[in-house]
Image (cartoon, rainbow, N blue to C red; front, top):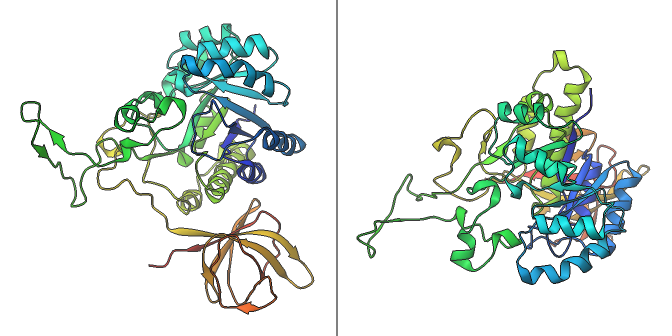
Amino acid sequence: MKRIELLAPAGDLQKLKFAILYGADAVYIGGQVFGLRAAAKNFSFEDMKEGIAFAHERGKKVFLTLNIIPHNEDIHYLEEYIGQIKDLDLDAVILSDPGTLMFVKKYAPNLEVHLSTQANNTNYMSATFWHEQGVKRVILARELSFSEIAEIRKNTPMTLELEAFMHGAMCISYSGRCLISNYMTGRDANRGACAQPCRWEYNLVEKTRPDESYPVVETEDGTFFFNSKDLCTINMVPELIVSGLDSLKIEGRMKSVYYVANVVRAYRKAIDTFYADPDNYEYDPEWFDEIKKASHREFTNGFYTGKPDHNSQLYGSSAYIRSYDFIGVVESYDEKTKIATVEQRNNFKVGDKVEIIGPDYFYAEQVIEEIINSNDESVKVAPHAQQIIRIPMDVPVEPYYILRKAKEN
């Protein structure tokens, strides 16, 4: 059985490394132009080179987003930019615009091309058309069911790869093509600067009474008309694998290192468990419990089993649910002294019970008994972001292991 690809977001170089180490087969990144996440840190050319080398040394792949919908003023730099990236040893570029595809084919003909979900591909004729233009992989629109994906697979050449989203934020507009942000804030969602007005709270105004605003209250907190739940398919991994897809994608280039690591490793565990014994596969609810320990909204299965209804929307709040704090990253561990050097990320103190997670196990628990600062002083609290501290650890740890703790009520 051909193994399906687990594709993870990487908003910067550090997130790329965590995604790879925690189980991603490939990552998708954005440069400082032409990607749809302008607010992410994104990658300089030097970061791209380092990230690609890091991934390739471990047998993993790196895809670069070129998926904005460009205006005339964007075109003048596109030729130069493609000339700069064509020798970076990227595994593919992701684009949505026919003109961008034409430029890539002209100035970097050896670059593999993937078609972004922004191109709204929902049928096999469209997928075949793009394949005939030189596209190796089509990232399907989010608005497809398993039966529709199966029909696309049945009616397209096997040389065409298919990819779909399996986890992350959902957009109220068709596969992300939204103009609300443009109208309300002047920030172009289709050029990477979405202000996410779909997450805002709205009132209703009737046409003949333009000066009268009506609150449509679902709860005492108000109503958020366009606010979708997040996609989560950890309970549907077998169906995704046998659907005909070649790659399963996690959304989230704007998310934290901890989010990327934690979500990737949960899906990695589920996918590997299926391949180990498909006939006797059993879903483990602990995988979902782990996913919920990263920042999230309530979840939906999206369109896979049918069209979403009102239960796929959030009406009471657009806030994330955060039940755990990401408090540190292990930099090194001394096996003799059993002391770990940690880069702190959020406040924690002596006496806190923390969980340690790594690529190879879900978590271990321990109570913080001592914190030693950079001056070799024993302190009660680690309050300064990214300060380097040392902590006695009950279990051996390695670089890139993560410390977290449950939020205090």
